[in-house]
Amino acid sequence: MDPHDERLEAAILDLLAQRRLGASICPSDAARVVGSENDWRELMEPARQAAGRLVSSGEVEITQGGQVVDLESAKGPIRIRRV
Image (cartoon, rainbow, N blue to C red; front, side, top):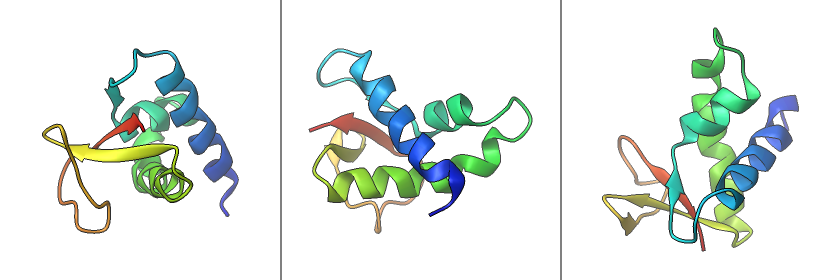
């Protein structure tokens, strides 16, 4: 795993813990927490991958348009929310 991977997973869970149940975040929210103002965009794909690992562990789900989707087949922007 990349050094950012654990930090991205923790950021996703921390951000979701601060929101009401059912609320979601964008992977960019976690990327911005872990990265700097200049390099957070480089962490977008690692943030999506971190979300995928959290889906596998049963902690979060990925949505598009409010509907749960499979990360592997999702095209475009996604949201992450607690299960």
